[in-house]
Image (cartoon, rainbow, N blue to C red; front, side, top):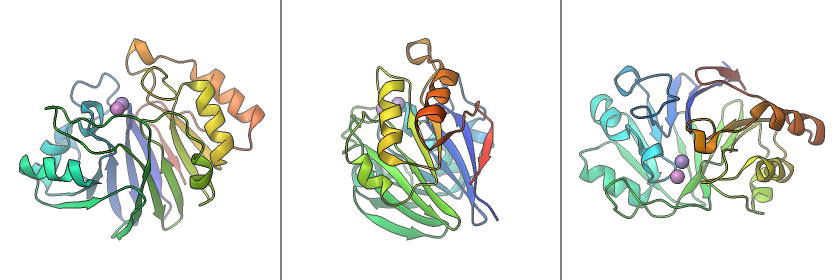
Amino acid sequence: MSTVVTWLGHGAFLIETAGKTIIIDPFFTSNPAATTTADAVNPDALIISHGHADHVGDAVEIARRTGCLVIANHEIIEWLQKQGVKNVHAQHIGGAHKHSFGTVKLTIAHHGSSLPDGSNGGNPCGILLRLEDGTIYHACDTGLFYDMKLIGEEGIDIAILPIGDNFTMGPEDALRAVDLIRPRKVIPDHFDTWPLISQDVDAWASQVNSTTDALAVVLIPGQSVTM
Ligand code: NI
Ligand code: MN
């Protein structure tokens, strides 16, 4: 069965693969772009990229209610445990681990990671998923960095890149990121949630399609793409 990737708005993605459901950065409450709610999802696993409230989001509530596995860096896992989350798996940058649905490797990201209550959320991460039918790289919140070339050397079927600017890469740097990563498909995220990060996504997609070998896949929140 093919992996299906659904944008849930902002940095949140639902990935259905190997009979399991994984949600990355489950930010629904207070997310104007959210297409679902914290009490409506039943994932097998959550993966949290960094500590900011628009990424940790509803993770505590979802994890407590469902008992799903939560994967994140060591500092965020320690904080989640203090909030009563029990089913956890800590990893850290550069480290890969084979889970029931596929292998998760955390990568570098250039950003912050303080948690909603001001606790230390360690260093922010990107997420590399090696699944049964392909590889997904979600850059998460980051500026452009040249080591994206190393990540691209792993062979990326779908890259998810922020284009919102201000807090992360904007459209121009995201285009340079596509050149470094050389994915088959690229999905833009982290834009249009609020006016501050609104972008002309169709113009960006046209540039990707005319100047790189990648295919830009522009989703609207709630839409899916198959690997
Ligand atoms: Ni952030
Ligand atoms: Mn963010």
